[in-house]
Image (tube, rainbow, N blue to C red; front, side, top):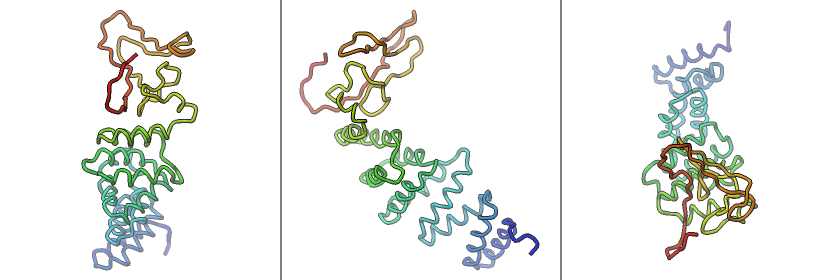
Length: 246
């Protein structure tokens, strides 16, 4: 009566009703308490579990999001609970819509975790594909997670088409058996473009000078020491056949 906005008080009463077996009243009190005491992790965890048991996955994800935003690290411990929604088409659609509309700060980390799981099969595209046209579409880094998993699964053709479709129009003119063979573009460090990797004892850069095709050339400089150099790389996706590298 003295302080009706004291969230912790609501949570104490909620715990009491929970112990008494009155789950419906406890859920209402936990919801009120979590609004007035938003940093109380136990309240959000209880509500997330309660909504999951009720099959209300949209409300469950809202509580999971609140918990995730409070965690500095350790998000991965909650990812299996979120990933379980992928198994059923109905709950998966709710999850994908939440990820696309809300774009929570843990979205990329979750997508990386999900894409690293074994035997996800068609669920990979079922999660990633709708996010291409979501309210907050896939970022370049998130798209790269998708491409890398497709390539690991031996689906290089799909990965390559996805990568090409994500290129800016002016970059598509450099698509060929070898992408940007003249090193005229900034490396994208992903997909099927050039990747310049850091290596002790050498430096890699592009300089304005006459190169293979136009105004830039690749320059690799070694700093007076032996270097196991393999740090300019590009993945190729080619049909089977005989090729000459020039």
